[in-house]
Image 1 (cartoon, one colour):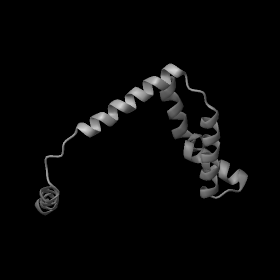
Image 2 (tube, rainbow, N blue to C red):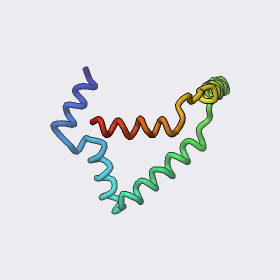
Image 3 (cartoon, rainbow, N blue to C red):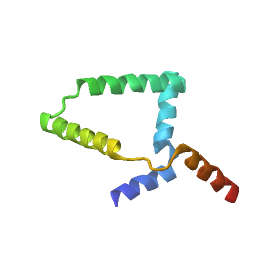
Image 4 (cartoon, rainbow, N blue to C red):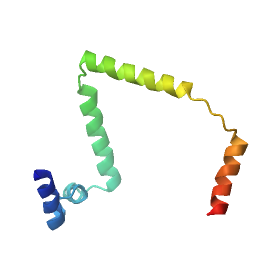
Length: 95
């Protein structure tokens, strides 16, 4: 319920929206969008470079990545490119 109220406040006062907050920060720092995004990227890079991941969590993520990679390798594409292209083009002709 509190979450809905917070969103309702954003409707009533658009300065509370994330986009308005970004624009306000850009104006306060006299930054272009590009400069702002570059600064945010650097800020996040530094944050995550310093972050320490729990070894068990890291192992879990490594296992998920390995499973995902293996699943991707196991997918066999049974449709040739020519057939794919013909189906794709015909879907636009039919519509």
